[in-house]
Length: 210
Image (cartoon, rainbow, N blue to C red; front, side):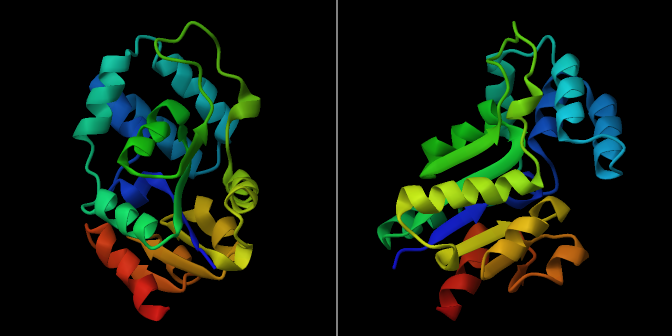
């Protein structure tokens, strides 16, 4: 039976940062996004409220700036190689993130079979953000279920990789999980834990246990 590997983005594939932070850095809005991130982590705002506020913050955002943020971000090493190995073995890899879809979907070009993020309007923005398209932790499980149906695998054949409390529900829904540079509360829930900068080594923890 094929396996489905489900990867978080912020803090997992991206080391020590998040897509909104990298995008905001291109606009010189580091202080503003830091405040917004603190409000979100402290649960003073939820995912839709965060999206509405960050949409306003990025009123002048261009596609070129998104590209610069993506290309200049501190990605883990070995992402393309890990996904190529997963594909070669007949398995599937997907990214599910709360970050904007226009950033997350760029990972399809690196070899992900699927990439899901919060649905934002196209850049540059000419439309408001629709809160109904913004993902939360529970949505990660729903998307994982859809991907299982799409790829013909069972929940029991899934592996989740994540770093924070937004991954707790997904970790609880699959049999194998890898905490990557993670919050200690998530480490306690994970099957495996990895600290470092190379996704190949995190993937090896799973492969070695098969």
